[in-house]
Length: 373
Image (cartoon, rainbow, N blue to C red; front, side, top):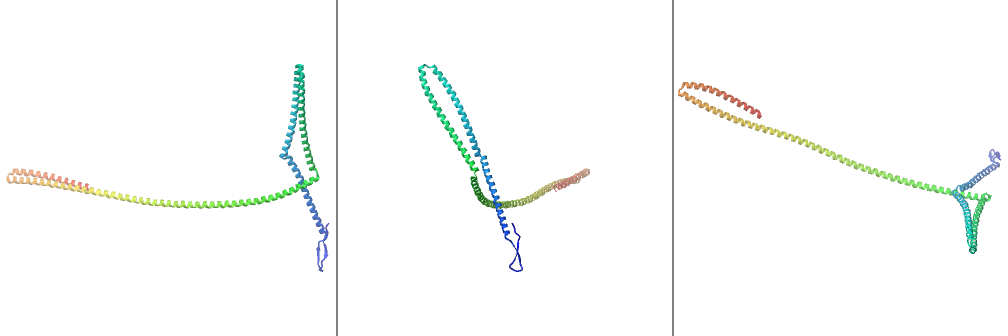
């Protein structure tokens, strides 16, 4: 229940203040208690729900677990083996009974065929054997009863354990204790999970820090490796550039040397050509000189021959003139006339022949001079 705000006078005159009454505090306390009660109720419901779910989950997990299946299967197999053993035992009993009956019949038939004194002794041994057989059968029956009693005790023990478990599950106090134990276990498990979570987070943080440190170290190593590779690449580029520059310089030197060699070769070729031309000119000059000498020699010989011929002709003419003079002096006028006429004709003819020879010699000399030039 809430109360309205009360307006009361302030000790200072002329002032009025609004104050909170007692009912408001009680109402607030009631609301707080109600909230706490609702809070506890909700949490109790949650705890009960989780307890019930825990029991159901445990039961379901127990029933659905592999161990429960294995135990159930083992129990089924044991019951099946027991049933099979019992069936086999009954079958063996029936077979043993039939076999004993057949042996008894055969034994009785053999006894009926024996003589009287042998039959009495055989009967005594048969009774002893029958007693031994009865003892063995009793021992087997006692062993079977012991086995059945032990199995019955085991079944009773299992039934008692199941009843005790059912009683524990259905008992309120035990359920409360179990619930408290489960709640405490859940709380401890929750705290353990919180601790494990904190440890896991711490380990994760440590691992992340270690991974970050490892990544940073790897990044630094990679950066250093890349820097070293870049430096090595730059060095290799510089070395390659130096080698290339050296090769270019060698190529330029070689080109310059080749150019110089080509220039020298051209110069040598020019010189060789000039020498060949000079040799050709010298040979031509030598040939011309020789031709000139030959022509001069021939001209000299020709002149000498001409002079000799002219001397001979002059001498012949002189002889003829002397002969004519002698003829004239002798006074043979007729002979003189005839001789003069013949001499004049012969002189004229001789002059013509000499003139032709002179012209021919001059033509030959001109041809020789033209040839040797």
